[in-house]
Length: 114
Image (tube, rainbow, N blue to C red; front, side, top):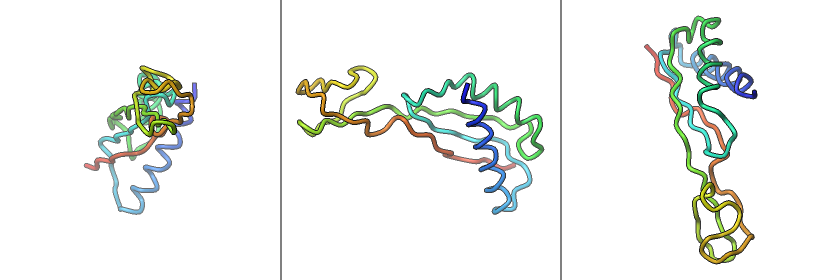
């Protein structure tokens, strides 16, 4: 379960941002992560709730999760397609010369202070 290490990293980043902006309490954090990132939202939220109890700045805060769709680019036909539905083979031309354009990343999208 890598979700705990992700939550630990995110909370440390939120603490740094809060300090820079003189925030004393965070009510919610929105994370966006890729459809094929391997992150399980339910596990992430469980880890967040556990860790938040130990961190005064975010205690009682909500973790909001948004999914970034996985999109693959085909070098042969220069088109994109939904990765999860078609995998590595381009549905437009049948090529395997493709690469993941988006859908594996994770970002802190928003921090809400109260």
